[in-house]
Image (cartoon, rainbow, N blue to C red; front, side, top):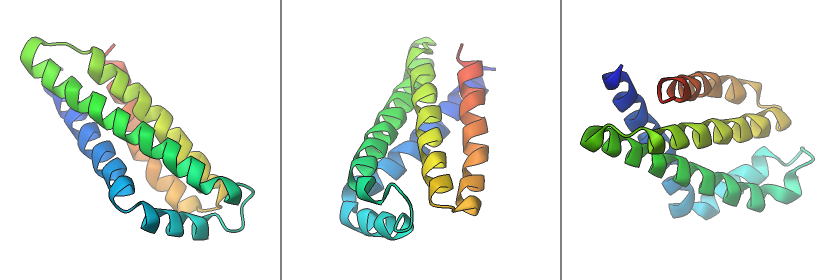
Length: 126
């Protein structure tokens, strides 16, 4: 089980850090894309706030997952990895909500495997 825990934590670190950093580096581009994506939804006025919240959650989930992989390697600790997985699952639920509200059902479906992986991570780190 230890390799599974390590690899899942590393995967989630890469997933969330890359996504969060992309939102920081290209915030304007992401905001423009999301305003268009949500233009016909009831949350159109909240795009900037939602982008900030999701970015913060992604960066935190990725950082904790990365620390979790490192902690697991160094002393077998699982607390960071567990916290990263929980925050990752919450983040994916937020993204899923956004995709459903935007009626992007294909985009929402793409999130399901990531969500299942975060649930597996929560389970193996308990």
